[in-house]
Image (cartoon, rainbow, N blue to C red; front, top):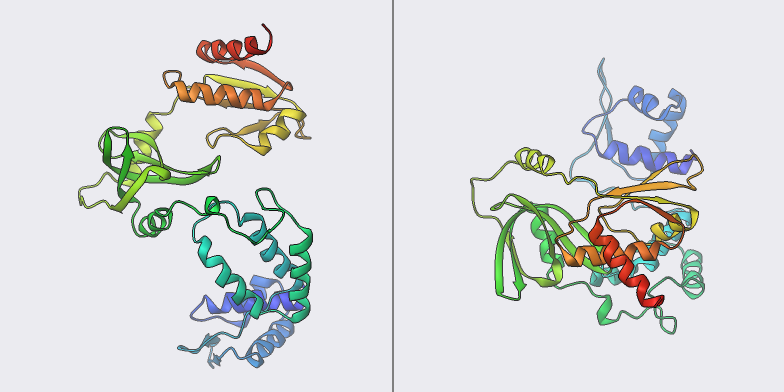
Amino acid sequence: MKKVERINVIMRYINNRAHFTISEIMREFDISRSTAMRDIREIESMGMPLVSEVGRDGGYFVMHNSVLPEVRFTDNEVKALFIAFMATRNLQLPYLKSRQSLTEKLLSLISEHQQDTLVLLNQILLFEGTNPHNPDILDLSDLPHPMLDKLIQTLLLDRYLSVTIEEEKGKQTYPIYLLQLYREKSHWHIEGFHLDNERKQILSVDQLTDVEPYPNKKRTSEQEILDKLKKQEEVINVVIELGPGSIAQFKKYHPKKVSLSYTDPYHSTAVLKTFINVIAPDEVKEMVNWILFLGEDIRIREVPEEVVGVLKGRIDLFCP
């Protein structure tokens, strides 16, 4: 680890502790006593207010009510941050409107040379979903659902939620325990445990009209919820072997609940196992679409007859 990087890491280590000793620094970072002492002196010269304590158990602590010196980024760290911003600016992410001010603050921390480098990167790098004629523009379709920010703020306080969804029969309110908030195929979804019918349920954030902390004080505990879900685990009914081409397709897109198990050390063959609810027509249709998307480099080992029927119907459309 380079000296500048080591000192930055030591500063973060120190700031997260009420008290530390030279021996702890030596063990944590595998450095000699003389190197640890030099690093501590340099950190003090940078403005971190360290106070030494004498005695058998002496050490150092950071003076309270003091501010850390400004953060310093390496050239590669600045590029990594900027490229990550570029790659995700059209992905309907939460807090999208805050990214402009965040970018401006980051730019104010770096040198003019680093700023010029970022301008050049912005000119030559183009990511999927970006308008090639105006890469910096944010279309309305890039903005996330307006309830997404409120949902995140609420679940950070309490994962037991009362959510209101707009459905065909009108607005419905569900008490749920949030398991995951995820984005799939350009849409955000809530995966939650329905506290009334005690089943896992997927809700679309696009249909969300309100979200509040669940007011009921008598709640099913998190451990009870996990135990109930474990008992409800679905039986595997889809098994597909993949070759190199279909593995590449899989990496481009796959449903959230599907994962690969590689079957050779070079990751050129794999098998996927999952469950599909055959009484849900939309789920069957989506699975068929995805199997066709994987391409010809697959071998279906097990699949429900309902899926086979839809697959044959699709093939017959092209082979009358």
